[in-house]
Length: 342
Image (cartoon, rainbow, N blue to C red):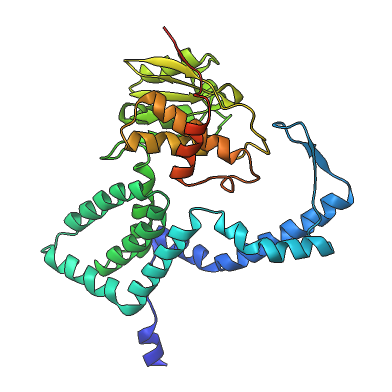
């Protein structure tokens, strides 16, 4: 009994101990995944039995609930399971990083490497924490992968220093999140809707550090208090944003900085299935153009082309194609209308 007690991991006390105790009671994430799958399947059966439907605002067509418990529904789930996961673009990098983190942890690489880092810091935990926060800031450049790696590394580093691992995990998560609005590289931001208005106070300190702000007109109007694209852009430029691209939906986009301002149209004659993910696709194409040092008009064109592919398929990413295919599409289509705003 004494030997077992000696091998037990000591529990933290105070605030972190309470959080740890509550967290340990949360089921495995896989259990949550199974629960949500069951809930969705049962909800599809219930909603289909009462003939629940909705009108797609993009096409005007009526969409009915598909019963996943029917014979066809079960066959569809089994045959499309792999393709559904493949269409989630972030899943591949996240799984790869999780495998790598798991191997490093189990093999002892993390423990040995972190121990050497801590020993070489000459007893200064502050140096280690500052370097860790700096790396976490830069990890934002890798997108969502930073959220997977840095909290794990933070927990390991803090545990090696004799501190609470939970504090390290929270430090990694908070630093990566903060880097979304302040980074040593070019920074950009898109937002989701917050009709409570709380985001105004949260976002205000971010504007002076933003190189590119890419909101939709619906989101931006709630912040700026106007639906005019020009007034919206002026609102954010006056607060320190360097470049503003407002997504106008079917009307295209509006771009403005201190040197130029213009409206950009859209591609016509597309078979629109739904618009989920169109805004994110626009941001991806636009920022790809920024990375290639294209002009603002060329960045808008690339973003618009990415959106054109996404809205022609169901789901947020199923319609997305590689950059070469998108460039060929741009070459094959009449140029989108660019109208200067003077």
